[in-house]
Image (cartoon, rainbow over all chains, first blue to last red; front, top):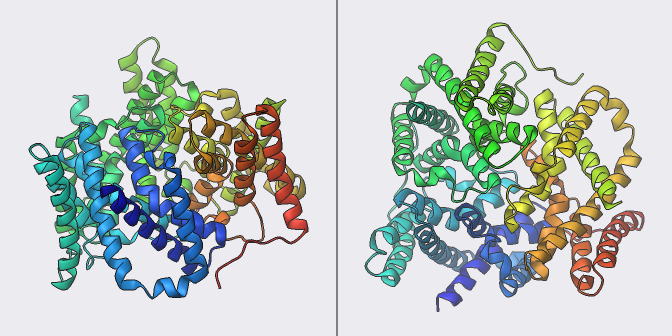
Length: 198
Length: 198
Length: 198
């Protein structure tokens, strides 16, 4: 079950990376690189930081080839994929929550404290998108888009995992992912915004 | 004593990162991310390269939370912090010298030669600032600001540590940090400049 | 022999990095940083990913100092180096093929599958150039230059190594490097292009 969700989340991340490549007018290789980096970059940065080398994703051949498959589909049918804005939004949020929670768990296994765990979770969720934006020549969207609780939602989810993991690991992961998802979805509906400097 | 100086240096780096985030109009999360990356990014890149994983800073929870505290203070009181230009300049220079020397020591422990040690020292001092600039969508300032001997001062300090460490480790660290500080401060007063291509 | 070719390839990569630094008007330190990053950055990223820490290149002091030597030469004589467009093109292609093949071999030793090996090979060949472009504030050229089969040629070369390595390791490396070189050189002559999104 978790496996299926990880696949879903990874492939949706791949789609958003490929869409960015299409939008920037990159060539086929550029689109596929962006799909791959966005899909597995966050987890790989986290794996580098906690010392799991090679990163887990680099061993997962079926997943990596599926990422490329998604990249090819987006390359070919991008107008239709772009029209799927709503499902992409929800699946992307699901992926974010999932990766934040599973990333936090990796931080816990590496013996990190709450800040380290929060960072590991957040990086797992948003690191791929940060790489995607930097490679596209753009400022990472998570740094300034106050009105979309994204990285901050991942951060909160990771902290939930940290707080609850000791007693009920599985419930903690579930609660953490859920916290991220709810915070993003309801944050948007309620118009929650991070403050910006005055 | 060294511990105290490391804290001072780290927190000043955090302040410069947070100020950059404020200047770019990032939201609260963006400002805190930039503070953290600038404060501990250089040492973390060095730790990745020498294979100390997770990076030391990720275990130092009190320091990490203090970095966030500084980020919050800058976020709230940035005009007043910006007015502290002079003390920030000197504390930042102190941090640079310190991190270059301590980074060089890590390079020595990893068995690197003079070039490797110089790189480890320089990266420890300037790596966080490079990440800060790249994430802000800017060309890293160390690459082109010929009139401010910054990365080059760190490089020289690291080489001083390399040259003297064998006989007197503590004196070598002190001399290396001092070399960096003096080179930056007097380099500016004397109008020293790195050449630029003609 | 391979050793000599690796030196040649590395130093040509250094020259292209230094030229980019000159073109951007960086100062001496910036030019040397760009030379170093371009020369050894790709292999270092690969080494981080496969867990060879510190990266091999950081131990190769003669090579690192030679990289700086090339950087200094380019800094001083850049108009003359720029005029060497043709030899640089061929030596750069040679370096690309070589690093892709040797990088693929490292991926194989790390137990990676075809995708992982292709990634390790491609990153070894183009990772330094990607870092160079990002540090220069530019979008990595490999992502959009459809008409120059560069990263894709490295990818194919790495896959050739993957396919043939089991039976004849040395022949596989040779064939992989050759595939990359031929694909780039004849791809250009024949006007081969990667597709771009419509």
